[in-house]
Every structure is written in C-alpha cells, then in structure tokens.
Length: 65
Image (cartoon, rainbow, N blue to C red):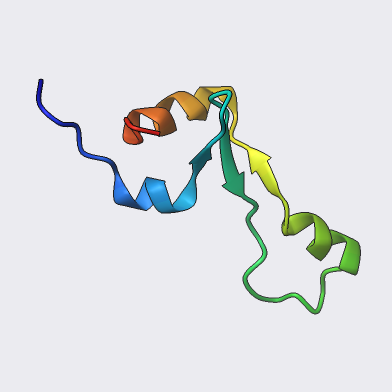
C-alpha cells in the first residue's frame, strides 16, 4: 500500500491523545491582551478538545497520529 502524506499544517496545530481525542490551542491569544482579564488570558493558555464533527476531518489529515 502507498504511504499516506500527513498534512503538515495540521500536524503543527493538533495533537491526538492516547484515547484518540484531538487537542487544539484556543484562539484570541495572540494580541490585544490589555483589554482581556487575567482570568481570560489564563484560560486561553489551556488546550481544548476539537469537536467530534471536526475531529474526524483532522484525523484524516493525520493518518499516523
């Protein structure tokens, strides 16, 4: 069988856990931070799960993850 190519942009943005769930970083954390509260910025540092609908598409881009 032919080797499948990994989507390199997806491999840099997502991580697949041991149980097969897909993690992503939260948005809105690059700039304009002075208007955001410390609590908001703290929560934006955490990773979160990709929705189950989108996780299927992400896993297709990461065949060996």
